[in-house]
Image (cartoon, rainbow, N blue to C red; front, side, top):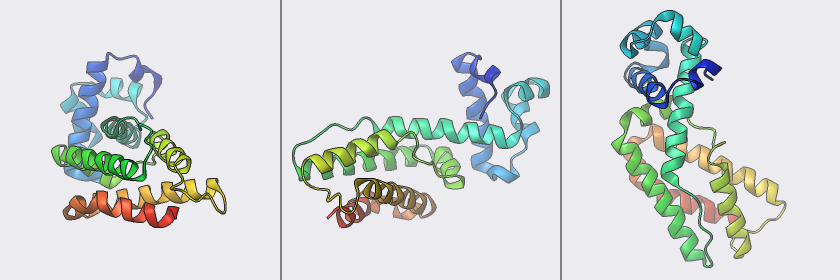
Length: 186
């Protein structure tokens, strides 16, 4: 993650550096991107770059975290519902927004394909989904709600990785997500 000095930069400056890096990583991959070229294109000196990042891997981690934050923002907050159909509709709507965002932002899709998010930021949405599903009787918590939660998170992670790799399959993502979750939760 970036060093503390990076966080003290103005928001626009941080965003500009990360945008240049994201474009390089999306085009050339993590291994193929040149740290020196990224910082030159971002308009910062090498000494400044090392005040902000420990190196290319650290910069890549910052790009992935920033991209994941934007993706989670697209997902939005979970809103509790009272009926199963409404819950599935909200899951599909969130998945559809994410697919549309990734199609509109291929650099973000490329970065996340190289390193899928860990869902740490999306955990509150998923935990809210699970709590709502349990409250309306959709989720069977047997043998334990903790295990159901871990399995649910694994489904999200696995499907995210699949969808990011199988870009032609993005249209199916919402339906496949609902299918897997409904099978797990019953």
